Image (cartoon, rainbow, N blue to C red; front, side, top):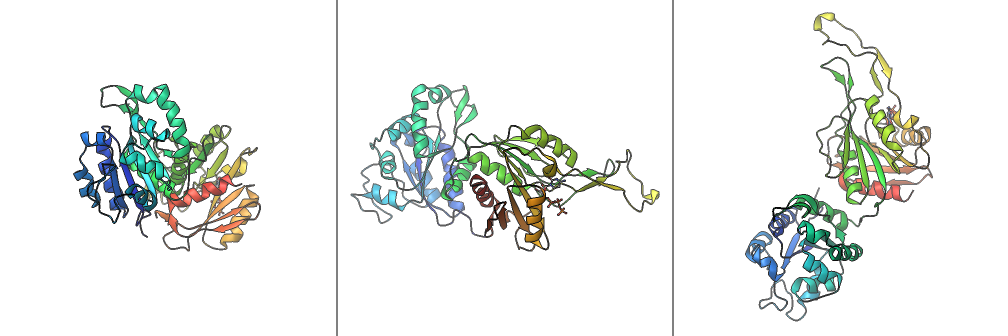
Length: 400
Ligand code: CTP
């Protein structure tokens, strides 16, 4: 499958802050993923990185002067800023200094970058960066409120700053800006702000003895992508995860569990604060009746293990007015089974994964799902990345 960024036209605006060095990596990542990148720098950005760095990385001319002397890319001299603004599918400004922020939100068009922003038709992603006091400054905070209505803001992070101080203001890492850009390019925004979402992911392991367990092939990827997408869309996310190799997205509260019983405990404890529960975990239906205290030896010649049913987490929760979403992974009679689970578990929506689909399901980074709501709406989605699938699932939840 082609990269999502393949063929996408992106303007990367770079303003004068030390984080500009990280934007070189961002440019590189975008180009590597197949995007066409044109860079515009403010004069102050030149103090930190050179246009040659970006033109080498992107293969395109870098614009610094509002009245450029040379013209490439088929852009006419008089209206290059309009041509650029119309050309782009997305503009990213990283880093965005407090100075450029102030200018942009008040409509200034005094350099190449601010002029293009003033003429922009496509979505804007902005990654502010400043020293802690400059960032927390009242005026900056007011300006950020205005920016919020104009752009998707990739919030800065806390940490060690170039000044030696420590605090909020470090520009988000390029990977995070890239993920936000994918989200925005796909047409999603921070529409889940103020929502608390509880997501479960991965398998559960039911111990047989200190060495062995009963597990399943769930990788946890789908649930982790739902958690990440919800976080990027502004939700407060709690992720209850079974044993998996996946890493939770920064800022997500992750609770690691092992067994179905532990998962149930964690869900029950966190459910009351949640508006939405998405049970993407592949919870074991059975566990050994008892766990052997010592490793079972071959000589014991055991023929069978006595099993008992685990408790159905979805089936036993107090739903209230929360939106409850389940998953169904089926190998046959997909629709029938999924609909039956939707009713039996009193769900608002169920996401059906079919193992019959190539490149969908366990371990893949892509998925193909069908969404069924309790009102009877059925929507089949094509094969796409689990990140995009996660976003469509979240949008369907929002519409419930
Ligand atoms: N689920 C749950 N607790 C369990 C088992 C499953 O909450 N003990 C949840 C899963 O997280 C999923 C939904 O129920 O969201 C459906 O899971 P699935 O395993 O497909 O359904 P089961 O009821 O276990 O039915 P079966 O295994 O027979 O298909």
